[in-house]
Length: 378
Ligand SMILES: N[C@@H](CCC(=O)N[C@@H](CS)C(=O)NCC(=O)O)C(=O)O
View (cartoon, protein in one colour):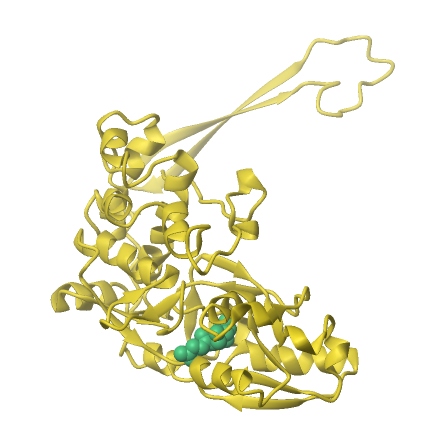
């Protein structure tokens, strides 16, 4: 045999059989309680080895980050008609919870939260915009579902807002349950989970109704405001948001009914795991910062004197977590310094001091009874 082999190691297997431990029955008649220890030495011959090659990244890996870096700006698909989540002001500027996620992603990539271009997309056009590469990421009150995750070629990162579908009616209608809408007309937007859930829930409850279907939120809620339908349905967040821009919000009530689960969060294209990781860990950096009590106001102090090794890694003092994502090591520091932590983003857009106030509820940290929980930074 001309193959050069080397004995690399001898594997010593020490098998300790401790009778009576770990549930092993002690023979009743043994009378000997000393553990029996048997040592087996096995010599294994393996080829003089070259180091194992690193796994080859699949085609598509890294393409998105490279494209975004070369372009010098992130293109984020957002809503423009839902105040508090994605809204375009009279001056053309975008604001909202989903919009701030885009800014956080830009801060992670460029160290500059302003290097983002917002592209307003309707419900119906959003997935094509992502698939075609017109946008790098979709951050637009979009529900994570099986078909979107498979057939529509998307990957959802961690949910940023846990929601559920609701129903709004004029207070004067006096309707408090879905059954009260029997025979009525319900305004709903096309290209949404809303449209599909409405059909499911009403069929399951045996309630007949006529859907009035519209292309975007403005036309849906305009029809509702004109009395062309008895009720309007969408995510509760959307109802709370759009009620604030009705002529007289106090004349409309959101029923105490939850028709579905709507986990809303950012979506990226299939096929680029590096980009997915960046989008995903941007969410976790926001949540983690809230868990650690790190805010835009104290992040510089937290970096100068980190309270724990994990904070040190999160803020890029130790380790190379940013480099592993393909970013600089201060990526999370930049997110927190420029955009804030999850609570700051939430409160800026949906907090008690905003017109679109939504109590945190399920969107609280797990330590406060919510569902937000970031994996370890290590
Ligand atoms: N979360 C649901 C519904 C999202 C949705 O598109 N909601 C409407 C009603 S609030 C909306 O945002 N419309 C704004 C627009 O089309 O510009 C989904 O992902 O399908």
